[in-house]
Length: 159
Image (cartoon, rainbow, N blue to C red; front, side, top):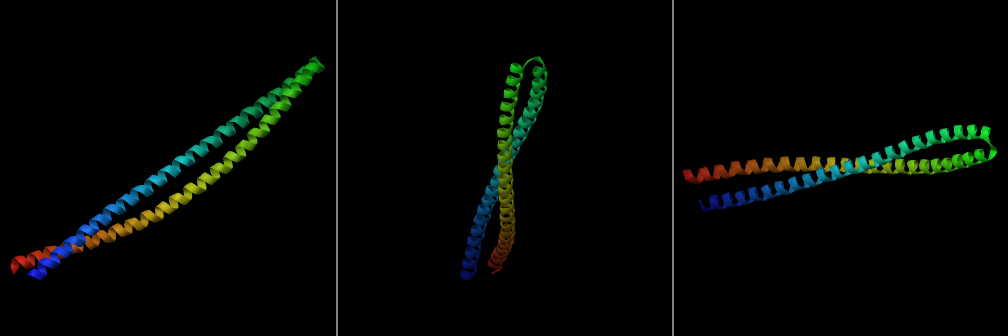
């Protein structure tokens, strides 16, 4: 009877340890989900920056075309006005080149952010899979130990 009581105590301690492992595993799963969410947020910001830069390039191209048309019209009206319009067109062209450079940089940053997000999501997915597998094994082991404890208690009652 004492041996059965000792076995029951050891099994209950093992069940407690497994329940603690399950709780820690759930915390790891939550941390992985939070990392995945943060990566997704970072990706959205990078994509928004790329879209903003693309919109600015389109607006500058439109303004450049308009300035070119204005330069042609002014040229007909006078050489000094044409020079000012051409200077404005050159300024817009320079700004357009700078904006294109920023767009390319933003697209590279978005690609890096996407690659990092994908890597984090893949790593999180691997961790989640491992955690889920460990949790399932812990639950199975805890269930078996509970059954053994119940059987031991029953044996003690019978004895």
